[in-house]
Length: 79
Image 1 (cartoon, rainbow, N blue to C red):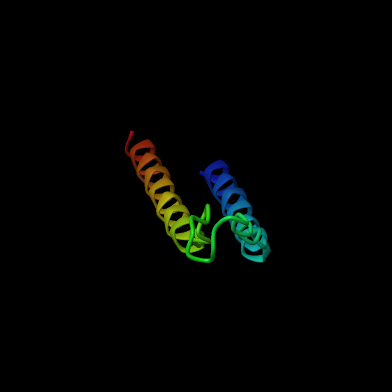
Image 2 (cartoon, rainbow, N blue to C red):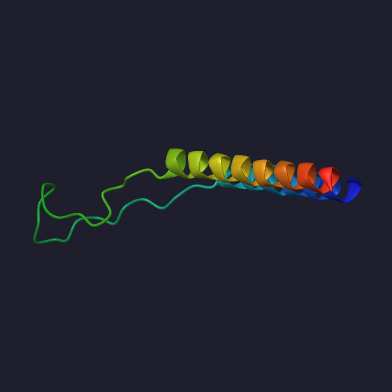
C-alpha cells in the first residue's frame, strides 16, 4: 500500500510541475501572410489556441488513472 501511495505522490508531483511549465510557455506567433495575398488570404495555422482542450484531456486521464489504481488496490485487499 505504501508503495502505491509513493507512486501516486510522485505522479501527482510530476503532473503539477508539467502544468506549471506548460502554463508559462509562450507559443509562436502565426507566420505573416504570403506577399501575393491580402489579410483575407489563406493564412496557415489560423492561430487557434489548444490550451483548454489539452488541460481537460490531461485531467480526465489523471482521473482515469487514479480510478484504475484505486480499484486495483481494492481488489488486492479483498484477496
